[in-house]
Length: 205
Image (tube, rainbow, N blue to C red; front, side, top):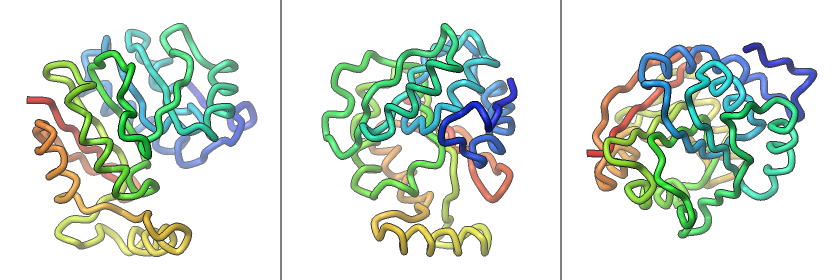
């Protein structure tokens, strides 16, 4: 499915570029019939692209309150039968998981470096209450390893993020993986992606 920049409100070029490489990996990693909660759906481009190409998925898009009108407008225009209406999910709220039925997969792209570390901690704290047994968590984005950036461009991006918002920044893989382990998740894969990004895959033990 081709995402047309002229038909999406708030079109994200980055989401358009990384959509196909991520889809290829999801096709390999998933059975194709999972219920997926997307944290931070943004413009909805990933929801439309992935659910449109993997029609057996049941996609649950979510975002913070100020993003919901744009997200839902795009879903109203482009969403399919396997994409639910957008829902509020704010990681500044400790009970973000309240009212959610268990899902097979939690997916999020380019969010951990935008939100504050406290919100990252809150996300992982309640994962075990949202994921089904053997459920997966898949996170896409840039990471540091052993406190080192994987590229000079990522180091520059980190500086830009922190200048815009001091609580933002590219996260250390080891710190995020420690949160996952505390939540009862085991790292299954760490896949190098284009543009100095990673696709991290954990599974609930």
